[in-house]
Length: 101
Image 1 (cartoon, one colour):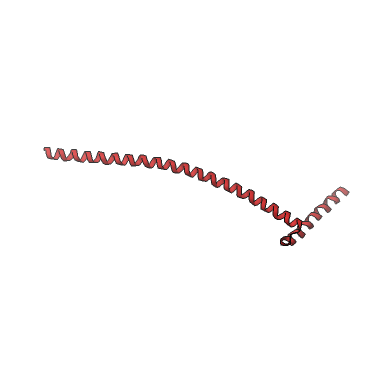
Image 2 (tube, rainbow, N blue to C red; image 1 turned 60 degrees about the vertical axis):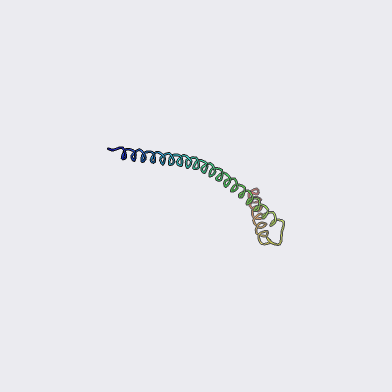
């Protein structure tokens, strides 16, 4: 081998080392970014779970208020009110029948 080809090989090796260093740095940065994204995803999952729980609680409260309004006889729920009252009367009649036996 002559000196020119040796210097070309050394230049190629230096270039490869430089590029490899950049690739390894990029890989490290991507690994860190991946970990940050995983943590952010965990936080988002917790937020969604909390919001889902809060939604379910609000839904239960809404249903309770809807029943209360129907028992109070609001105009919006007259049919529901009548059905609920009839259901309660049947339950009371059943209890009285059980006590009578």
